[in-house]
Length: 220
Image (cartoon, rainbow, N blue to C red):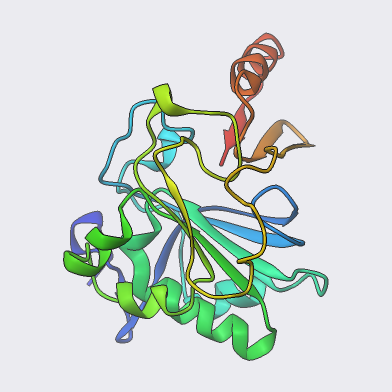
């Protein structure tokens, strides 16, 4: 059957496919060390002020096998961690768990995952298959909906109601909640990409600059 948004999670040959909005590597803006990032397409939360509204619609962007995507994310031998964002990664948890396991069979990478759902919600009412399997692979989970009025301009959280949960001991000694934010702007031929949780005011300034240059900015 041809994949459509209504039969997600997408399956091919009995295995899950990931619906990917974008990827980027390497970056130091979304967690400790040198990281590769995958943003998943599709979200069911519609938080006001979302940094990446173009990744909310549950439409097909790029369907890829988890193992293949893992190989792409690890192509840089210096990458030490993976970050999952979106969109809502937990809608594609089974595929991400498979990606994480395959990546870790190749390299001892850390895993950071953003989600708009609270950890308690994920465990009591998972939005789809594979949530517990993914949580078992995650070192740090940033959970909770984004609330623009509670954006305190600190850490990996978008707003202060969100939590930085250390699910393993890997980064427990770090203060990822209160460290200064870091954002990177990468410019290519006809495009610019903002990677990271942007400091307050940065998005608006960039949007104005991009608009005046008649270009486009991808944010995540």
